[in-house]
Length: 252
Image (cartoon, rainbow, N blue to C red; front, side):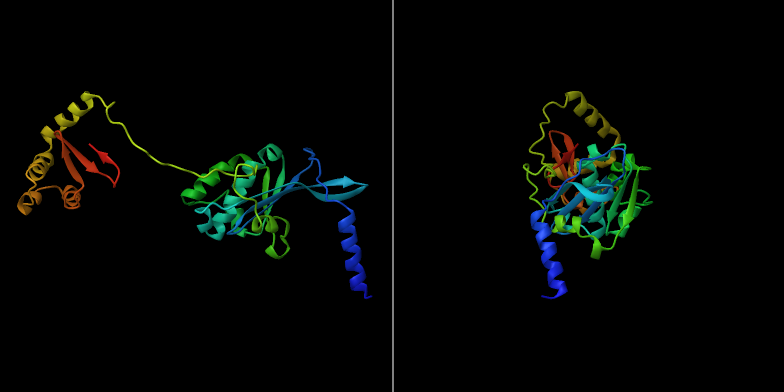
């Protein structure tokens, strides 16, 4: 039997006879947070180096993962990496709050999130979310070829369901209906009063009440009003002129 096979056998035997262990966190020592994101999911593992049998040993404290939500799966590499950092910090806040720790990632752009000058909407929200860790957190880049622990968690992530402690609920912003009966008559009276000084209202009321398509009349409207009228965005109801902002919202 070759030396290589003997070594492989010994490693396999040790793996089978020695169960994996999780360290108890020591808040006097710094932590290491490994994160990774891919199109399938997010993964993170929290480590710490402690003295065991008179030797410094780096070991895991906990592992977390979750699958991507459909909208998140369309993010680019940089957005995924930043999302993973924010998610991991949120889920492991009770370990990391007030402690010193390194974040190890294979996405080099994550290092710039804290100090990004012109972030987009997502990045700005995430940038604000992690400001409390400024001064305690150091982000370190590590090549993906040797970034294996969190990488495996992200590729075989747990389902994003309530039985996963690291899950994030789907964001739903549905407007089922808006009741306008509570808007007082005083409001509508003020709206009607404002029409007396607006020539556009008188022109539009003629066009809408008579269902008139007279170009000479509509040409008297201000340019922005004419554009909205040509797009059929104005509606007249009980003397109140409504502007349709989109397919679902009318505004007096």
